[in-house]
Image (cartoon, rainbow, N blue to C red; front, side):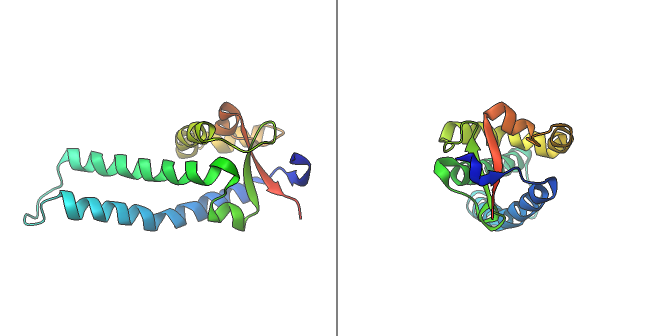
Length: 144
């Protein structure tokens, strides 16, 4: 299956991440709005308590992870991946299951936030990121 694909450049990966981040603004704002509207007291203009800010952060984490798990599993793709002709597959070329997609999503967050993905992908010949290596997946680009 991988003969119809090539390894995407660092630039294409970066553009995909930027596009994904831009697309996630809407769902994240909506989830935070619902939480604030239903679970906070709006009669007082005080500082939001720590437990509520922690809950908002957990909701954002869950939203982002679920978005990517759904987008990467069973041969689906996110809008940014479809636009940039990217696909996530297993090392053997098959479709990614929910468990591997979940593992990839959880490993991708610290990899992306620390910038390790860029260093590792620049040093490796196959340009795979740590979260791809550890989860047994590959990010590929469709040949034209």
